Image 1 (cartoon, rainbow, N blue to C red):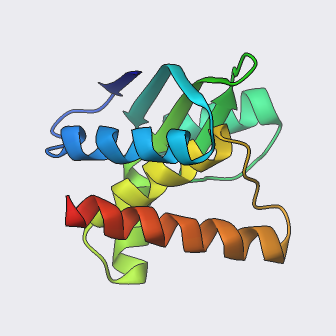
Image 2: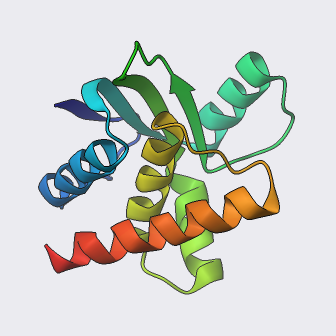
Length: 140
């Protein structure tokens, strides 16, 4: 599995990338897919906003943008995560930033594995799956 973490901001690094990669492998395996090349870019609000505007035509801030480049049953893609949004969400949901970054990363990989969150039912299912993989990541 070729999952790479990149940092477009100073003073932020994942301290538990080994555990996160293990759970990512599980997400992909549970979806009966194979892992290809996936880049996770931790960046700023401004950069994610810029990408959201330029590539998706959206005029708002978001915590994550996922680009799916899957080929057949092989998962490939890019995931852009706003570290600023993750910190804000962590405060709002009263969780640690480390917990929230895991949840957001797993959310992106669920999208790459074909899950969507367009409807209330899909959001509920994705949220349940995020929580399951989050719990698994802390059991490692």
